[in-house]
Length: 509
Image (cartoon, helix red, strand yellow):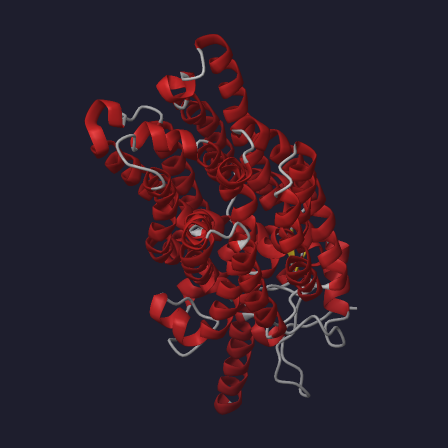
């Protein structure tokens, strides 16, 4: 049976042809995803290094400051990179919609690797006094600018390259790279500490050992850049950009490409939903990763090495579970998985911090596992659910704005605010209350979010893995509740052209 492209007489919606459907085979999907995963690996490798060296870096860069100001100033270095992220998002997001996902992702990868490596050669406060914190802050700002485009671009990229019915599974691999990167960063710090202090004494990490993990980022970054060079552009972006070249931009069309103003004008509601979900995800996520080393050392009395020993296995097991949860979201939907994440946060967070106070290694391991449960459900669906809230033509820009505003205000500042709340109140459970508050907001936002599982991305035609699947999609398009051709600009434009030609032919007759 052949399906025509023209609109039928009983509907205004255009019709799909087999050639309209994007077919991406598994090999190409794996190549594309591997090239994006390495970028997130590098980003979180730096987070792992900085998080587990925070107490050491406080001595290295702020030796002249009294407690607790030295540690807070060092943690502010972590926060400042997130405060710059919205600027990177505002610049790199719309640029990614204009020139392509691939080019921007190469730039973000290169800048991140260079900035991380340069931290390893900075002068210390012993050499230049408190001025030492200035170049550290500048390099953290460069990292923040690059990451302003990294996760938004990478999640947009994997979402657009993934088949509709398996987007949750394939996109979840992006955050596998994130948490494995953090675990590797933490492991490098632990091994460096163990080796240097056993050979050169207990001050070895402060003297020079802290530089080694940052310098390791240079060869790792070179490998990551090589992978990033091999990724192709997404078919969804190529199709949309070809349409835009052939048509005039319509400022009133929400499916068209827009700048910052247009994104807020047409997509303010999904932007707010994304901000709330990202805040819930990242307050829990950064508490588990970047803040936990400091908390365990300062509030529980666990050594840097002991914190890594407890955290790394938890992160590895959690990472292994992400594709399974992603696959679950393909079956039951993104909204139910977000509901599990928010609900488990409210149930588990306070008991987890209570168990942590026991102070023994086994208790820390159990507590971190409890914290990791909601984090796993959050992050497993982030890269598939959040980009799907926005149309293809403006997806990178909208994701960059929503994600980075939220991470900057709420996620990346989690270590700083959590520690400050403890210092202010003397209550070691304040981080748990902080995380639970944002989980509640995220749960409310989830209730207003439309379900996106099993559906084509907004503004794109369906994406499948085989030609046979494409034929089946075209065959059932009228009765398929997951297919809405009125949200596919390429079909709308073709249908308009067909109508225009028909009207012209009628007039000439």
